[in-house]
Amino acid sequence: VRYHIVRGKLDTAGVKDRNQSRSKYGAKRPKKGAAPAATGKKK
Image (cartoon, rainbow, N blue to C red; front, side, top):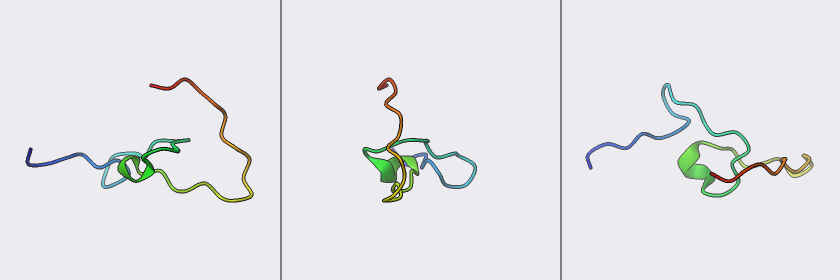
């Protein structure tokens, strides 16, 4: 495979509330004092 789409770069958006494999999906590390993210369905 020659190219991969990298989330959070160029014109692609990052994934909100992403905790695992964050770097692949353009999700920043949550702030230490922030409330935990709501648990949603896993896809």
